[in-house]
Image (cartoon, rainbow, N blue to C red):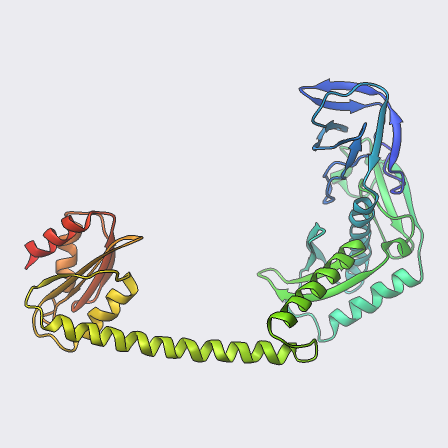
Length: 370
C-alpha cells in the first residue's frame, strides 16, 4: 500500500508522467487523493491547470486536465480543501470510537463540505446526547492526541474480510479509535480545528446527526450570518426580534390564506349563479383554471336540478367538470374516457378531469352525452 497519504499536509510535489490513457495521466508519484473510502477528491492544479478529474484504476490514480501535459509535472493541492476533507474524516473515526464505547454504531456518513453528517443505529438517543457529543469533540480538539499509521499483512488482520489484501493500513488515533483505512487523516486531533454539532433528525434506521467541521464550519457560520442579515433587512428587524418577526409573518400568511379561500368560494358562488341562467347544458368558461372549475361545479351542485357540464382551456390543457344531480357524473366521465385520454374522476354527482385534447373536441363530446 502506498505511503503517499500518511502526511495530509504534503500538498505539492514535482514528478514525471508514468502513463497516459485517453487524456488521463498517471505519475511516478502524486499528492492528489481521488474519491474513495468515503473521502471526497482533492482539488488543485497540475502545471497550473485545474484538475478536472481523478479516478482510480486499481491502486493507480489517474488525473485529468484540459490541455496536454509534459514533464516536469508540478502538482499543487488546494490546501483548504485538503484540510476540510481530512478533518471530517478523522473526526468521524473519533466518533466511531465514542459510539463503540456506548454500544452503538455509526452506520452511514456524509462528508460533502456543505452537508456533513453521520447516522447512528439508535432512534432513541438520550436527552442531552448532542451536547455530550459536542463536549467530547471539544475535549478531543483541546487535548490533542497523536494519529499514527501502522501496516500489517492482510492475512494477519483479525477480520477475514481483509485477508485478500497484501497489506492493511491501520489508523490509530491515540486511545480513541483504531481501524483500517486508506484515506488521509490529521497528524493529531487538534488539527480537526473545530467541530460543531448542529441538529438531529430521526431516520428509518436510527438518528441522523448533522455537523460542520473545520473550514466547513466556518463556511456554514458565514452562510448563516448572511442569511440572518438578509432576513433582518427583509423583515425590518434585528437579530433579537427575528424569531418574532418570522412568527408574525407566518400568522399573517395563514390569515391571508383563509381570506383568499373565502374569496375563492364567494367568486365560485357568484359564477355559479350566473351559469344557472344559461340554458345550455355545456358551457365554455374563459380564463378559468382547474381549481376554480371544481369550485364552481361544487357551488352549482347545490343550486341546479339539471345536468351541467363546464369546460375551459388553460396552460395545462383542457379542464372540464360534470355536475349531475341525478348521480350520473361518474358514468358520464367513463364515457368521455372511452373517447379521449383523460385524467380525473369524482363522485356520482360531481366529476372533473383534464385532457390534452382540443377544447372544441372536448365540448363536442360533452354535448353528445346530453
